[in-house]
Image (cartoon, rainbow, N blue to C red; front, side, top):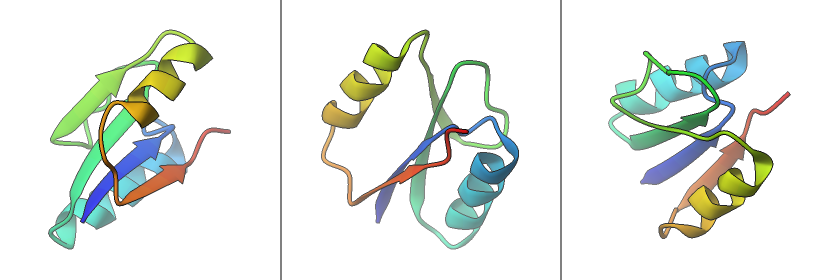
Length: 67
């Protein structure tokens, strides 16, 4: 499955990504700062860019870990 994890640089978001990738899923992290826990990550500067990332692909699941 293909997951988009919002808030990937936070405590919960980093563990979600680690667990998804360990289970063999494709997890793409979205955050305002670099994300070392994901094989694929995208950086955003504003809330409007988060919406663009959500609409940029066909995700199976979007997980919101933004605090």
